[in-house]
Length: 121
Image (cartoon, rainbow, N blue to C red; front, side, top):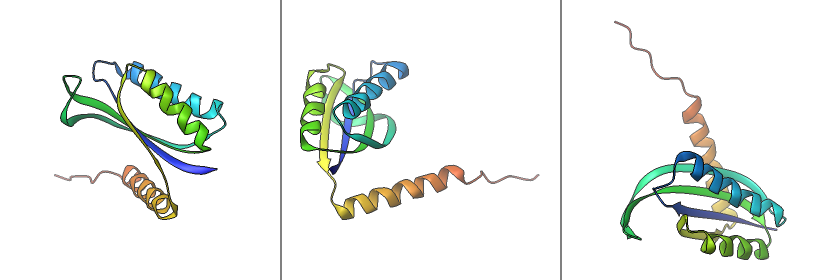
């Protein structure tokens, strides 16, 4: 099995619940085809570099998973057919890419755990 990373942009007209449902649908597709989801991130609503379908913003999501090539083909076909997805990109992760991704996740985890500084008057 190979490691893959998929980043996709959902249309900004969706509610948060609809966006989460779409992500769960894609994660479910990966697992039903025999893959294993390692990590999923919500990057939130961001401004696009150029308009896509006359929209200037979109919800960005990232999914890291282990799977065979056929799973990637099935996932991408599903994304092409889903009208909520504006763009997507799947990349096969090499050894260095995996190490960087794990290091980045660990660093993000540390930032979330760090308590906010207290201000004394």
